[in-house]
Image (cartoon, rainbow, N blue to C red; front, side):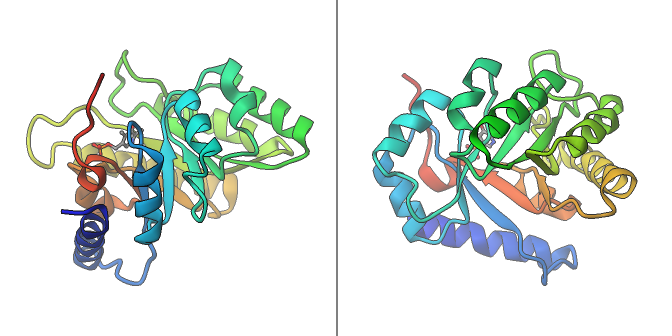
Length: 230
Ligand SMILES: *Cc1c(COP(=O)(O)O)cnc(C)c1O
């Protein structure tokens, strides 16, 4: 199957999941997680109508960016972000999904101000409480959202989550539902219901994420094929 065929088939499954959840009139965005795939693969996904491409590693992203891999689609950053790399991505990416600490919020503000831009961000929620994952604990989220909302060069647009690895089918559904609840709650309390994006769901569970209220899914291997780790 080609990248274009994979994207078509994922769109169909997304539409099906949205219809089953009574969300057929909402636009749910498909973000291609293009890590470890070359510029040519990114271009094929863009030609096939992907809504955005998401990268995980700053170095890899900058290399592919220089090759023009992302021309024609918004570029997102979805991976773990180190503070000292913020400068390299602010202003280049349309959305940072993975803002996981107060220090990162402040550094994004600092760099965005320097460049005279507004940077759109999502706050990452560590919904499984996993030591190995970054992200705010649910109880830290409101304070972080209030802080981000006050900063002039940050546009705080929603939440993102990566739940624990599933061990049973639909195992992540309760996590997705919990993050949706937080998304609605924070949206009401802090943003007058104006949050736009709830980024959750990957190749193995995007349909469950849509059932739970995702507005954006991040799909890698189901589009680009299995990744070859070097
Ligand atoms: C790689 C990646 C994805 C996509 O994972 P697949 O299982 O290949 O669909 C989604 N989100 C993040 C943050 C990723 O790093």
